[in-house]
Amino acid sequence: MRLDQKYSGNVFILSSDDYAGSKAVIYGMPMDYTVSFRPGSRFGPTRVREVSIGLEEYSPYLDKSLEDITYFDAGDLLLPFGNAGRSLEIIGEYVKGLLADGKFPLGLGGEHLVSWPVIQQVYAKYPDLALIHIDAHADLREQYEGEPLSHSTPVRKAAALMGGKNIYQFGIRSGSREEFQFGREHINFYPFDVLEPLRKVLPELAGRPVYLTIDIDVLDPSCAPGTGTAEAGGITSKEPARSDPRHGGVRSELCRRRHRRGGSGV
Image 1 (cartoon, one colour):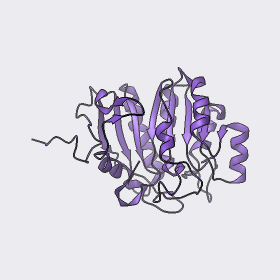
Image 2 (cartoon, rainbow, N blue to C red):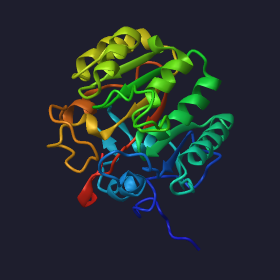
Image 3 (cartoon, rainbow, N blue to C red):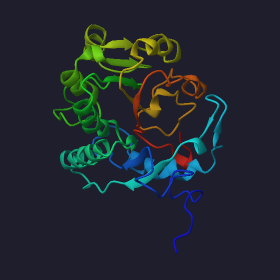
């Protein structure tokens, strides 16, 4: 008989073993093939699970407990190492199945390119989708060093798919001149800050399906020193915890572009 895994660190804390009865499904996307500086985010899903056993089940920020919901940890997708194109196809196929089953997808990355096939599938089901992107980097390039499948391109791809005015970016403090110009002209673009502009935007999104993608490097390097492309001037760890995502329906993904070394995590 298999031992209870809820507090093992092998699955996210308190995960149910009942897929059919779970509202949400956690899944890992261990891919970091296109990173341009420090690799390692493919180990992110494992690290998140390991450190989750140090969490309290109760959140005083939301006055809710993990015990109030039922979620299933499906483990990590088996992705062909080095093959970004096929890996994205596998991710998309899996998420399409989750949505068909009526599940709330919670993805753990992985570099930020892994969010692209997820956005495609969620948008296919919810054509009135809004995208909230919280990150240090704009990810609005069309290509990076000649490669369109890059961790610096997913939001630009999303803008072409769903229209830039359905995208809301927060915390951005790094990118090319062209990316910042594109963001200001075509995206709901809120550089440098997260909490206050997010609070102002959320009421207008009430009732819409919202896909949320977060990169750990939105945090200042003093809070996340092991991130792959550290950018000074970020937010503190307190700010995301105070950002309340409960306005409207949210289809959510936690995207860790690079894991923090030393066993710590989001």
